[in-house]
Length: 109
Image (tube, rainbow, N blue to C red):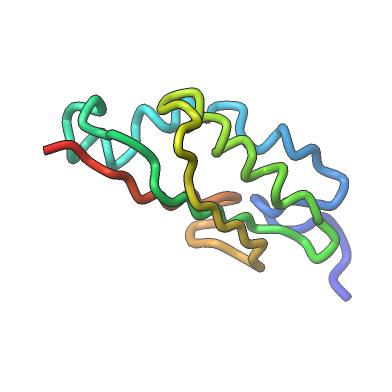
């Protein structure tokens, strides 16, 4: 058994799910989608959202964390017709990231 706090970036069972996304809009505005499309108005709708969260075994609020990402995209694109969502708790993520959000969008020509 390892003593002390979990590695940086991992969600603990006692952590608040709301604390995962305090800067979500600012992060979204600097995504690869914006860099490649140059105009976010070309994004018609979110098709699929996958959320990976670096967690401890005891953390059980995966869906609540993913709700933060879903809520942001519903705010941007509206709720109709919705999107597919997958959420996973994982042991670790690249470069110590606490969260990875992977998206698939329908794009206008």
